[in-house]
Length: 498
Ligand SMILES: Nc1ncnc2c1ncn2[C@@H]1O[C@H](COP(=O)(O)OP(=O)(O)OP(=O)(O)O)[C@@H](O)[C@H]1O
Ligand SMILES: [Mg+2]
Image (cartoon, rainbow, N blue to C red; front, side, top):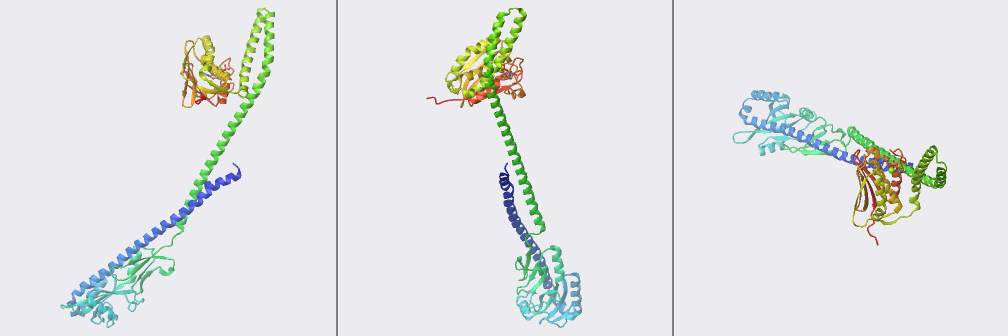
């Protein structure tokens, strides 16, 4: 292949597919990673939300339950304190639990420092009085980062459902954060109240406007949990991408190498065939022209030897002359075959009915058969079979093949000649019952000078093939050792004869 063609092929087979596939991989990778990260963030958010909701719900329930035993709580401050302390100690989520009066002032609890302090705001007290249910405090004023907790309180009701005071629990944010970290350690999240007070956050320092967040509302309180979707591509994904690109390059490069190798092989084969054909053409033409020049002096020599035969009747001389004559005959037969090689170019073909050619050839083949003590069976269809050929050459081919059949058979056997047409082809089949040929022998029969016979030239089939190919036909051998041989000549059938 030329360098320019090579470059174009490389561009089309390797570079272009590599670029296109890389873009597709990249897009696909980005999309699937994005989806995966989003799903991960949603999953983590749901897990966090369930935990926070569970803490709030359980605390609310506990406080509401405890407030039912209001008589105990109000009768004896000491007992109340012991009870609250016991509850706080058994549950690590609580920073402290307090009993407050109707105004939200602490009267007893787990931390005495808070006694006589307002621990809830008026508006939250009003909400609890109104709903008579536990309230989660999420206001800015009460949330002091130094304390690191948030509050839940429930009203203590008397028999007439009037609010007597409140029970308040401080929930530890550090404990909650640790638990969330255990549930899913890698995610960044923020927990905010309705008025954007940040209750809890983790790794949220790197917050940028480009980051994507998934918002999950809590069910127990009107707060919002936001979980950050991690950045799109990390080194791991990059490695996957680079590996895919590498394998694609490796694969396309391999395809390119295979194609290149196939093209080189095909070109070499074509070149070899062309060389072979040119060689045969050259040898054929040379042989034919030389043969022509040999024929004339050979005829002269033959005439003179004939004279010598008559002149020297002694037995010894006659033996020598007979050997000379036999050798001259042999040269003559080789030269005749060579002459035919040159003829396809010299003679022009015309339209013939194969049956008429066979009619002329039949007596010659039959006399030859008699010589070998063999019978010939003719099987010829009744309608005309028209082909373009040179009459003498086609005769020569059929005769050569029939002779090979006679030579291959034992005395008393039959040679069959079948002439018919099949689709677009006229078929001449010469079937003998001789010793047959192996696959390997069949591959050699058309080579020039290939012969298994003592007296053979090995040119018969070589010439036959050349002639049949000059008529645009084919000649095929099918045989098995000891099973006879079928030689099929196929010539293009002429159908529309004017
Ligand atoms: N019908 C056949 N059965 C068995 N072998 C065959 C048959 N036809 C050809 N062959 C084999 O092919 C070889 C080549 O045949 P080809 O006609 O080219 O030359 P040849 O017959 O040996 O010599 P020539 O044709 O000059 O007498 C033969 O020597 C023979 O071995
Ligand atoms: Mg022969």
